[in-house]
Image (cartoon, rainbow, N blue to C red; front, side, top):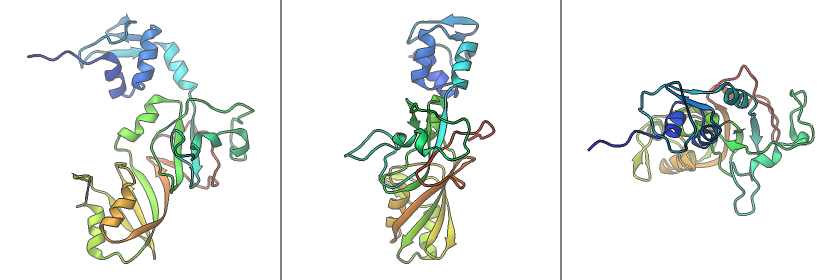
Length: 240
């Protein structure tokens, strides 16, 4: 029995044209063309090989969407407020914009910012918030993320090897990682996935405890010298 072809919004998200939510908005506004024909009905399906294009107006709208790297402090959550802890998006205001960053945010707070990847409440470092659905999908991809991790306890050579590859969480094997010593008491982790509290749980499995965790890179976007608690606009020459 043949299955129905996929929805156009699903194809657009898979191809990185936009998020599914944005795709529905563009379709409703008549800004999507499939094999040269304008599509306006939500839920429309198309062949997996269909040619799908956004109208120039939609591309201009995407160009105006903002993405901001922020140096998240401990105590802030990545997305919506949880258990009284504030979301990192509350820091995206003129007061906390890095000195010298351009353009300057005047008095308005940026809205509809979604995290491109999660960073748990006890961790600090690079968090990317964006209005762009394509970038927000980074958490579903295999983009590299780099962390500096301070540990308490004795890590054996065998344990270090297991951190690289061989551990499982929730009954599912972890993808290979790159883990190495940075200096005494600190490890460097490079991962291509982001399970909930993954690094902390990995370390517990090899007998050590994380006492500090800082993310310094997502893809090719780096934390650099961005001060704790501050943010900046993603530069036009930066790519994930």
